Image 1 (cartoon, rainbow, N blue to C red):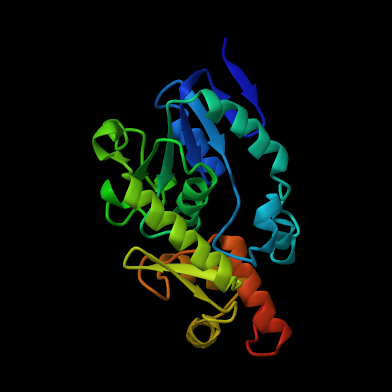
Image 2: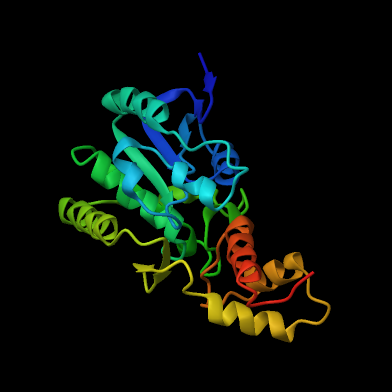
Length: 241
């Protein structure tokens, strides 16, 4: 019997598919009948202190409209399914720090389970996340799957512990590595962009940053860019409609 709960969908509990966003969740749900789990932890932004309790209330500092910040019940539910699963498959990216940090998080959480990963950029080098791909492009996804060896999981766990220790407010990817930085890291470039756009509005600037990211292929959600811009407006560093 198929079940459908908040953040969970599917019926085959032998393989658990894990994604970081609603859009990716809906896309891969059309691929197979495995259990799908959405963990929108937004691990690319915010301090990570609350992760030990699976709490991301920190995110409300950046976006007050986020509805889901307490993940302990979801993780507890996931733990029950993982006990009987043969494998966990994480849908990730070498280009997106949220997706990649989710892989690190899962490796750290389930050290003794078989874990595999599929990277969006191995389908299309410009696809920073799985949700940028079409169902047709994902059709032969099994051929892109990497079953992580013990040392690869250990590397992921080591990397996870590093970013937890660094505990900065922002993260991005360069050459497949998570870089920790301050929340104002992109401010100077955003200010330059704002000066070069005619009849500028907040949403015109957000669109510009998403279409032409400051660091090639390093993109954030629109609400993250809006936070950056709102903070610059508060500091009178940019004038904008």
